[in-house]
Image 1 (spheres, rainbow, N blue to C red):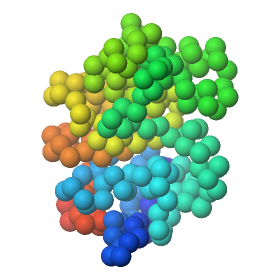
Image 2 (cartoon, rainbow, N blue to C red; image 1 turned 90 degrees about the horizontal axis):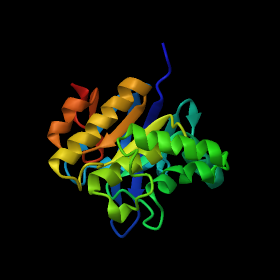
Image 3 (tube, helix red, strand yellow; image 1 turned 30 degrees about the vertical axis):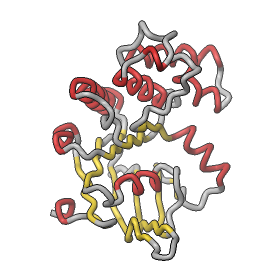
Length: 228
């Protein structure tokens, strides 16, 4: 039996203040390699907080996170940065593209940050943009692309270093219905054809039909729907 690619053990995140906020209250679960998982729940339930702990954007107050067999919670800041670049891909609600860079440049930037071969990463960036249906838009800037096209550039960028896991935080929240369907169909294609593991935060009930599993959060805990 293959080892789960994501393991969360008693994960906690408390934000300090006069009245500390317990955003995560000791969550434990596993995610199988090659699966497409949605994290769902009401606003304020801890969805994005959970994704940030798993993806090394934030540091949990307690517990452990294991990614592809590596306990990442206690890595140094430098090692976390290296791990993020080499093994994780990110897709954000606001696309997070650099407006001064073309689509091609935005996609190969993470590979350039790892010091990889320029000829190889330019070729791969072009191939990935073709994969997401933007092969004719390599030289276009973000302001020349629609929201759906920008999000597809972001997905290509997330794939450039052949990540073990893609983390997507509300990737369709700013898109119209047709563009949202295009993005979700693309995620499903990546899962089926590349065996890509994808973990996505979403508030859209209809998105359940795309995923293998839903992790329901309620007030920082795994909800009853997930347990049943």
